[in-house]
Length: 127
Image (cartoon, rainbow, N blue to C red; front, side):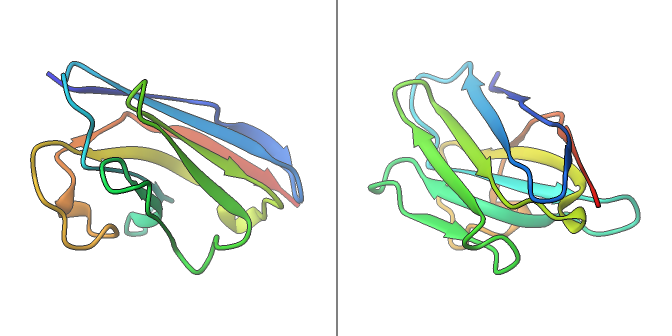
């Protein structure tokens, strides 16, 4: 069974930085794609950033984080990282790691594209 383990969340002041990590275990091969989503209570989960693990680490970002967040693949360890800089209070959310193993993905930002999810790590940014 695939397990995704996230780490790195916490509380920072506006303008600060955090680095999230997510490592997948329990599968022999790399995921096709791994991504970060986030969710605040009462709102729909939104895609933050995704990276193709098997197609030359092609990366995608939501418009809300482009230029501030950087997603990086670590194919040797079936892991991804999310470097978050210039954090804003509106970035406060629970951040979830997602992975698609053994399936094709047409669009990185679709929740239904992913068949494995982590438990989440909280990020809080204060003004």
